[in-house]
Length: 143
Image 1 (cartoon, rainbow, N blue to C red):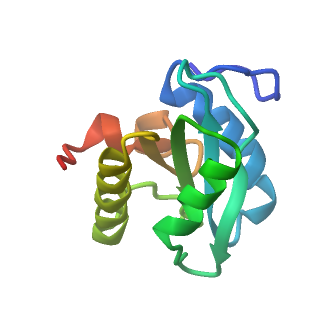
Image 2: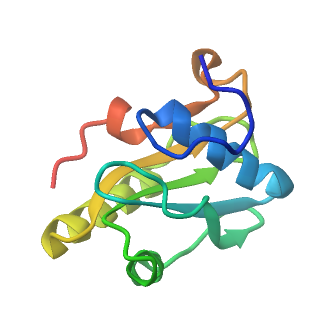
Image 3: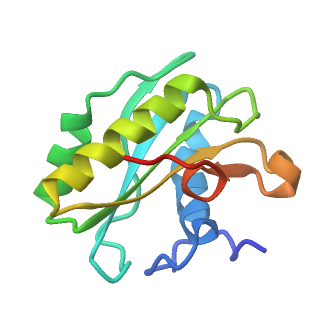
C-alpha cells in the first residue's frame, strides 16, 4: 500500500515511496507528459524532491546528458526517473525501454551515479491497482 500522499518521505525504500513523491510533482501536468528526476544519496536519502526535466504534449524527448547534468549539480550518487502517461496506461513503450537501457548503461559506465529505476506513472487504478510500472521490477534490462 502507498504511504500517505504528503511530502514527509525523506528516504526511498521501494518504488512505492518514489511514486508518492512523483505523483505530487506530476499533479499539475496530468494532461501533458513530463519526465522527472529524483536525486538520491548513496543510502537512498532524498537530496531534493522530484523535479521536471522536460515535458511535451504527447511525448517527451530528453537528452541523457541533461538528466546527468542535473544529478551532478546536486552531487547525487543515485537517481530515479519517472514520467507519466496521460493516457492513464503505465505500460512502457519500446521507446521507454530503450531510454531506460541507455540511461542505465551510461550510469554503469560512469560508475559514480547509480541508476535505481525508471517508473512510469498511470492512473491510480491501472497496473492491477498499483497505478505505475517499475521498469526495474517488471522488465529485464541488462546492460
